[in-house]
Length: 457
Figure 1 (cartoon, rainbow, N blue to C red):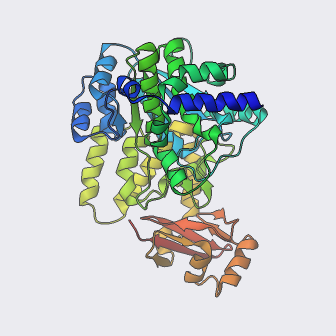
Figure 2 (figure 1 turned 120 degrees about the vertical axis):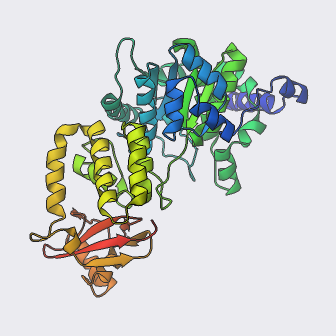
Figure 3 (figure 1 turned 90 degrees about the vertical axis):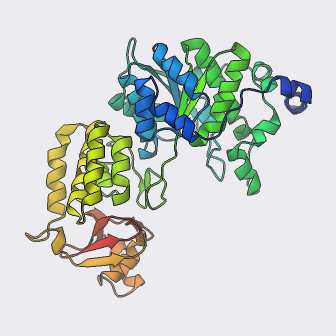
């Protein structure tokens, strides 16, 4: 144990103690942290159809070399990878943007390489986290990999000369520590690692960052190097929160193998009211039918805020951009809710078809139509409860709708199973209802109904 610690700190000292001369000698190309207007213009006017559509749909956040990427994509088929850690037994809507990018890549004739982090999940990605992730055992990680792999099958075509799925445990589990430090550690300074946003945030808040997590960015960088060697992967995709990790992989592969590799990221999405995409007050919006029914998935999209509809059409459907622009033009001239509600229904239909298939839509429509009817009437006939904020607690909503006279009575109603939001029973007395630009049906028992109308559009 003592000798291992001595080795560890000696190696860390070697990394941190690089001379100024060595640091200058190894300095990579200057990599911008965000895509500039010039980068966006180049992408929109690119020779590569993939890159043009990528930018036009709003996927572009950062790129290490936009001109070099256009050249690669135009010259021939490019293998590009995107990594997903196996922290749960399914993926949620927060991962859907990345899956749509892989699908777009395949549509334009390139090869998606889906990496599941059987190795990196054992470490835990600190990006965007306020505290360390709970470490998972081998059996749980494998079960999670099986679960998320079934999601990819619905969007991406795997097989000979098509997309492939790889597990970084295949090389990380057998990687020797000294070998890793000699290959990776000698190429990265601790100063650089401390400059990464995920690290700065944790340290700035005086929150603990384990040595295990601190190594995560190096493992992800090594993944790019290994995939370049094994599969000829020249492009890494990811969310903008992974920019530092991706740049590290680009630099490492350039230095060790002189590989002309590139990193490309998409923005982290928020809804119009500032909520993180993929989460609601009721929990995650899962992509597996075992964890979220096709109807509830459809309902999630149907409840999109007015301000999000056109953007979500571009990001999460395969409708032609020209058709979406026509919708946007018409929406700008419409004053009532009829047209935007029709667009929300179209959005929900398109997204649900991609994940669950079109066969489930008739049953979903029947359920939705019956849900929003009240003894032969329709949604417009229900009493309206105007809410100025973008969200409201179910307890406060029950009081505002005059279904309860006090918070105590409202909580008893919820605990008794009598409160429903859009037909779904409320289980948690602390549940919030997101209302930014949305209309939500609130029910107490079988006979009392009201329409919550949110502000914050």
